[in-house]
Image: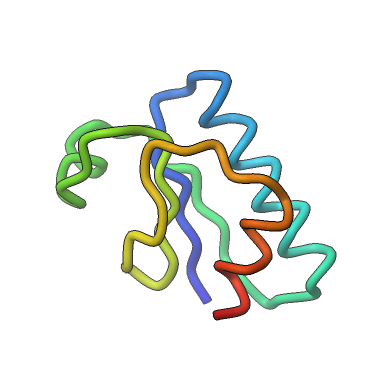
Length: 77
C-alpha cells in the first residue's frame, strides 16, 4: 500500500502525516508513507484544499485534518 499525505508543511499537514504514521503502526499495515510537499505534484491530483490523503493513487480525503479513528477507517476500506 502506498499512502501520500499532500501538504505544504502547514500544521494541519504535519498533524495528518503523524496521524497516518500512528494509524499504520497501530493497524500493522505494510505501507510506504510519503509526505508530498511539491506543489506541482500536489496540483496533479486536482484538489483545491490541503491537507489531502491519497491511498494507492486515489484521493480519499482533502481539506480536512482527520482523527486517528477516521484515518484508520480510510486505511481499512
